Image (cartoon, rainbow, N blue to C red; front, side):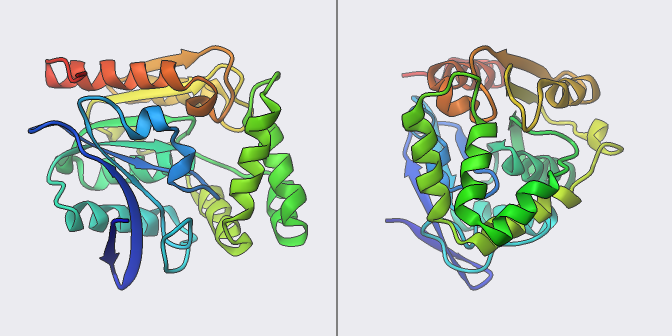
Length: 260
């Protein structure tokens, strides 16, 4: 299993190697998640060299979780350097989208394109979530799962979400949500200059479509995909639709088809 060392921390990543000269795509998960929040169809996107990271303190990675988005953005920047990504597409879900926006503002020269999934320029967190993580982690995980899916979710997906959440230490998840709560770049997001795609589930209750619509209104030349029958975990509930949207976006940016 591949690991790299970033600032003394052992970072795990999943890598699906694409064909020769394939574009690179780095996937960054959300709060309390791991690389497994990105389903197989996205982790193995045809025609693309895909990297899916476990952030510090999550999944198979060592180290300690961060409690600010800029700190996570620096980890992702150093990770990209460690695995030799000079230019790449960056996709972030929820907190991962905040990390991706931060990198797009600080290091636009590194990014060929930006993919923001179920995220916003500001990510305030309900006090019930923060309190629940501290006082009753399992109940909080179940509450988040209920909020993270559409109105008629697959019960199996909910249970998988809870099971995965409980494998991430409560301290890491708490730090993640604190990082989200502190994040606010509404006054800066219009400065993002790289090609950008927003993807949001039409039934997203954690980061409602208006969050992505705001990003779309602010980021010049950006594209917006609203996906029906999906909530916050849009890439899980509508895996094929999200994979196709990302493939189309990468192809448009590069001016050529990337699918095999």
